[in-house]
Image 1 (cartoon, rainbow, N blue to C red):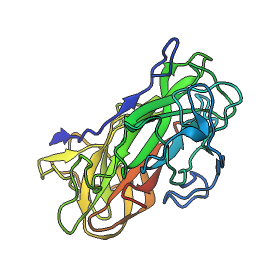
Image 2: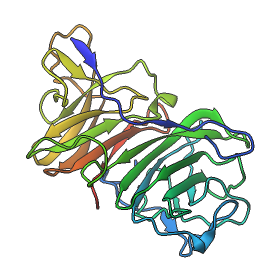
Image 3: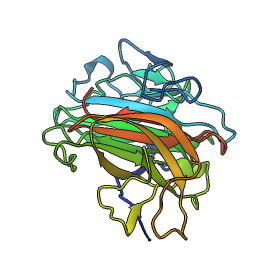
Length: 300
């Protein structure tokens, strides 16, 4: 049995000197990407490099799922700014609690070329070099982007861990690169970016969307996609419907895996729509707290 995987874009934030760094709730939530625990600033003003109300609407739609927790497992809310870094007194665009998906927002751009700057801090913190997350994109307008953010291993200026993040574009939007689902199918991408900071990277699973192991888009009976902590994803094209997602341990001795035993994780309902793309993001604050969230990547 060959082990296979499908890579997606993965960003790792590292500490830098003199510049920027590099839903559903796990308890009681429904796992479909609802929005409790999110607060927004009406003016979207920032500080440091941010030009505040002078910024330009981008025409893009962006959301952030926050899976960033401290090494002891304490959840951390994130303040999101439309700037690569901010100073004391800056007002965030919005704040996102741990285990929640933000509402859709326009990140704005800083110039006519469409350059977007985005950063996130632990709630209430500011300062050049203290941002746990920072990213820039050149936007054309119309993009639908989802970020998932978890704790990484780098150290920021204030001693806090930097974040590891994954940027996922909706490939069904015209002009966006990326493969779309097969005709009549919906696609589900499974990713575990950052999970290896909490769980052993030696762990691997087969994914199941119902009965038995599910074949990924590049799989056959001799080779199955695997999901492991820290991997950036595997993709599955499914008929429209609602599926129960589960993870079954990889068994190197099985010629053909069946996913018939007790799963390591199950119970997350994943809706699949024809021509649209969804994400299952796996995360944990502590080693015994593996959970997941289903997020539609296609335009809300």
